[in-house]
Image (tube, rainbow, N blue to C red):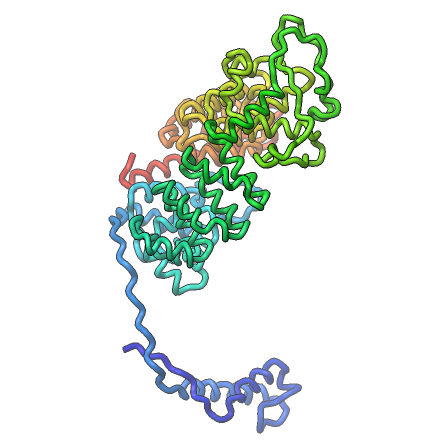
Amino acid sequence: MTRTSAPVAAPGADVWEGLVTTALLGTDRRTPPGTAPGPDAPLALLDAAAVETVRRRAGLRPARAAERLQAAPEDARPALPPAAARRLAMLLADRPGPSGGGRRGAAPDLTELLPQWLAVANARGFAPPPQVLPALLDAARGRTDLRPAALEFAGPRALWLARLNPDWRFALRAAPGGGAALPHPEDDDRIRQLWQEGLFAERVALLSALRSRGPADARDLLATTWATERAEDRLMFLDSLREGLGPDDEPFLEQALADRSRNVRATAAELLSALPGSALAARMAVRAEACVAIDHMRSAPPRGTGAGEEGPAGTPPSTPSTPTTPTIAVEAPHECDPGMERDGVVAKAPAGRGERSWWLGQLVEAAPLGTWSRRLGGRTPREIVALPVADGWQGELHAAWCRAAVRQRDAVWSRALLGDPSAPEAGGPGAVSLAERAKLLGTLGAAERAEWVAGFIAAHGLSEAFQLLGVCAVPWAAPLGRAVVDALNIARDAGSYPWSFSGVMGLAERCLDPSEASRLDALLAVPDEPENASPGAGGYWAEAFQRLVTTLRLRAAMAEELGGP
């Protein structure tokens, strides 16, 4: 039986504290008891400390037996193949170098390969070797981006370890109930108990898990305590309904439109507007239709819609169109009435925005996109986007359509707003920023997304492509990979600064298909530098391509070790 020991409460318990104080003050100012000041005082202090240490260690008596630790739970998943286990140990042993902005050299950055390794290992259902769990938990502690994949791979034994080391408590916080499994879907009593008595994080995890299993069950559970929840908690719980959002959620969300919290009301309205068949979406469509129409015989700006006051700041009114040219005319709302506010329209405009343009944008982005074909003469989204918009309202209107396309996951409208990737303005009339283009691309399928970004890079290079590349599926499809490599090669031949493309090169190391490595061998030589090239650029480029090729081959080896192509 395991026993622990307790110190004896012996006389002179303050002796040790006195010796510590003497050491701190110095023997010139204070000497141990029974010792005179002088050169022998330091030695006497050490002797006294040694005696006291022995006394304290020897003066222990048996204490009550401590409870024996329970054994770590079994992990039923198959063990890693030996080569993959060795690779994992190597990845965990690597430490990122100092970020001084200098040359990275030709060696792969192993720390950036660990997330990919974990993703593949999790997909194939392997369990980690027990001896690597401490290093795996340390890695997850230092990098929050690693935690979900690392804890999934680490499994139940990591949670057992986390209870023994305060440094790893984050693993317990990330697991419902401190690592306890969620209740079985049919265990109604346990579900209700956890929902009523659990910590906030546990309740959020429970609601999210139920939502993924059965949206109605999660919504019904939330309804049982909705009226008594705090406003900030109601907001977080309501946000969990995004998973599996559907028409059956409408009655609950309509009720939330009357919530006493403005943020809760706004979130409920946003969720309802993502349901094109909802009553709120229909109300917003009526309001938006009153603001936007086709003017077939336009000769002057409509009264009250001049952009000088209410439209986008600094945008001059448009010149009159040819009388026979169909034009979109905009009449922004003149007030934000209580019905609009109840449906989630924020009345107060941000600084620098006109109130009427602010209200217009909110109405249009919440209206079902199917509204506009009916309202604007049966035209397709591409035809609607191509129409001129009077009085400088085009940017405001198209930006609202962008937000609506993303919210409603409408790929047809997203294509129309993105336009041709090779267009001179590099992105289409509605995407006013790269961030919006990236969001629109997110509504398209992986293959179409990669094809569009490849066309963008072929036409405009890599200078603006980084954010767009971030939304493409990994590994990149062959056309996208070729477009990136070709653009990097063009930049190298032009003598461009290689460090200007370090972000794209880093993405390529993680996202290019490893099969592309053989195509890059021709780029490993140091190129001849043009007269206007930055000094030493050729060497930097050769190093970067060498690192890229080495990393791709290492990723291929990792996948093979984990039992895949």
